[in-house]
Image 1 (tube, rainbow, N blue to C red):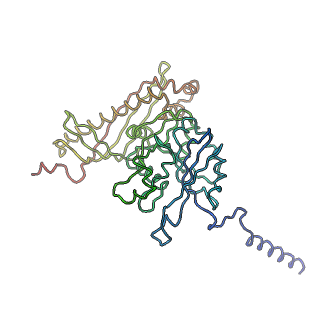
Image 2 (cartoon, one colour; image 1 turned 30 degrees about the vertical axis):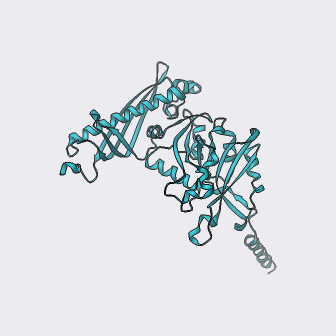
Length: 401
């Protein structure tokens, strides 16, 4: 009986410890606030200036009767390091910050040209920051301006930017994958340099201070996607337009769908095709000490619009459009690769990575000088697009009259 009594006592104490113990880092909800966006830019005297976007729950959900006002509040802190500014945020904010909900990190191009590793090291070490957070470069404007652009309907800046970037990439392909995971992968992989999404602001950001942006059908300021930022190692060296970024995604095999407007033969106008599938086959080999790159691009799409009177109700009409589209995409691809070779001299396409994976013994002796060899590489491309239909009509209205 004594042994049974000790057993029950032990089980009772164990159950009490399990049920009554609390979390060591417990934070009350009413004493915390969500950190949703971060902007990093140069400060005074060589310091870092960091702007934090903090969610204002009452302003973000006015339709639920919780109040009104701006959806977020911005706080700016300057310090000698990024970690210093983050730890001193409570100089201005009364609540404890929860960084696990950060959607977007915007980095000023002035900071990016000096290198990102020091800042990214802090982000990667944190157990709160997710791998899918967006890393974007602010082009031609201060990074903090991105978080000052408000949208009607209570959508805060970082949410708008994240949705805008992801939807534009999926629907048109004009911005590269720019997650923290993609940054880490590009830095560690052999034979491919880093690209991140680039954004800018058009209009008057200060109009948001007076609420004029919500009183007009035309936004006083807006965030616009500016293509891709090109890096050598971790330093920004230039940009690609949205059209060049689309070709970049096509070569990488990351283009989901897009719309292509291309000129018709004999300058008869333009046609537009909605490309819903595209795939690129890459072959890389070394010949006479230089890389030889061959691309075979295949895709298919639907005809959206047509300026000329081509007989698309016949096979000949579709063949003429397919030939014009294929030749246009081939020219765009070769021009874009040539510009990157001449102007930047870095392999952002991953041709070196392909050689590393498929011909390791050929790549290993030249791995340190790959970018210099890529700038002199010979590139050939064959492109074939198939138009599978013309949606609801195969004749224009003026043909039916």
